Length: 354
Ligand SMILES: NC(=O)c1ccc[n+]([C@@H]2O[C@H](COP(=O)([O-])OP(=O)(O)OC[C@H]3O[C@@H](n4cnc5c(N)ncnc54)[C@H](O)[C@@H]3O)[C@@H](O)[C@H]2O)c1
Image: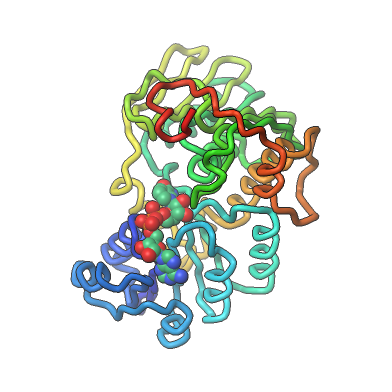
């Protein structure tokens, strides 16, 4: 069987992770690397088999006709990149979270993909961590009883972290469909960031299977004292009729069950998480086994994220799925007061200016 030929676009931190792990997998061959800044490409290319390099993603995609079009650019140019992936006829498009920054762009992406046969994967790869897997197995084995609540908190801002919190908690709830969202937000500082977000957003989600989701993301979220590292201070879990199970991104997991207290180690690591994520792409292409990070799962979480922004800007419950496009970031810019954020942790002050 010939290898799947991969073009990776956007060779920053995540592009390098992707190229490295595609190169390391026997079913993939990296045939192209693209970035608008050429210098680092030449330096990096020999470590992944010296593929073609270039600065124009559309031209490279047309010329190389890759089986896998992977892009790891910043979130502002998602639909442009999806169009290139669809037009070049790639069998699989792999891209970074968040799906988009507004529902307007998300709906456009969904529409484009609905007319394409490409398999699509979004990088919520933390789930491959052994501590995430342990929590999932504990919940799926019924050890916390019947799940009634899933939750997630993070100190990092929404365009970085909310998509992760929502995706893994929805996984713990077997991806039940979300019915509505209601949320509040504060702080305008990060609305000007390349990962544009309110500084702090908190919201409630009702899932169709009766489970409640509760999320807090940004500088007003509670501390996770189990973890030292600021970006790893994320608590994601589920509570059920007989206990709870939760993962701490930067430091292990814990479950309190009717059979006792369970716990274990684990810390988010790109090098540990990427091989499984890439292997599941090979399994989807070769055996038709749908990737756990498929677009359908990611898009369901994206709608929850946009629903929280929309509710925070407009008030009230936002019904899902979203059907009308909106620019939630513009709405938040108008709705949020300019008062600095009241941060929970002193070390958050440098990010949120609060
Ligand atoms: N899944 C995760 O765990 C995780 C972790 C960090 C970042 N991310 C996401 O990954 C994405 C990229 O983040 P990063 O930290 O790698 O960013 P980065 O800034 O390190 O890299 C982005 C690269 O894209 C290049 N680029 C920009 N426009 C381009 C274009 N039109 N064509 C080709 N290249 C272009 C830039 O020059 C840069 O090298 C973001 O969406 C971010 O949210 C995900």
